Length: 336
Image (cartoon, rainbow, N blue to C red):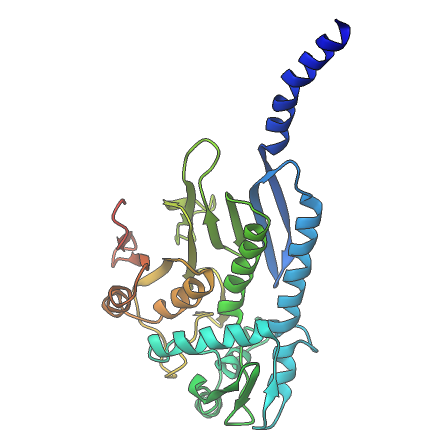
């Protein structure tokens, strides 16, 4: 009789234990990468080794940073930039994938996203000491612009690229963070994780829904610099989508009394004249959204909307500054 009772207890509790063991639990991961921070919230089954998953993510981010950071002297991109030759240059799979996507975006945006803009970034002082710059001369700007044309970065074959002008230097920072988000998402997917939020430096991808059956909600910050509380301008519900936001209102240098935003026109030495202060792009790929949001900061509202209407599965949220310094928005997102 005692044995039968024990068997009944085992039969009763075993499904309960298995059910508990299979349940997902919210896990938070964070750290530093690419000169900024990353954060992850994922619903991970209890039987999964979350520490091993986080270690895999950290190693993956380290590899991407070693490939595409201009701040690391021996990174792939630094070595390519110092390679003063038009001969073939072998790159990693990470580097090559980003170059391939960058070529597509350069074409879609008619050259307004340009990964060869690095000479201008250096010239204006955005790379190192932002406070040690004087406004460049016309000749300096002209010389830098002569090296800017991403169409002259050529793909020879898989993992082989070269530059037509040996003096060209590239910067992939406006696409690399998005690539990093996508790669973290792949790791989570491989581990069978169906609900998560991944963010690197403001570039975000979400999958599934939260366990309260609500969609993930992502806030877009107000571009009002007088707002010391950094309020949210609006929030957007997302599921299985990426969102990347770009703006010139926080990252800038000041020369004398004039501010210069970090998003530089790669096709002209003329200053950007636009009332668009923030652009958020929603897409299936964070890498694509990241680069497109940067390019849209250089376009008029009409030009941006034309591109969005010609692409599939792309939405945009633009914030404009009106003449009275108030902010208005325009979006293709139907539920806002």
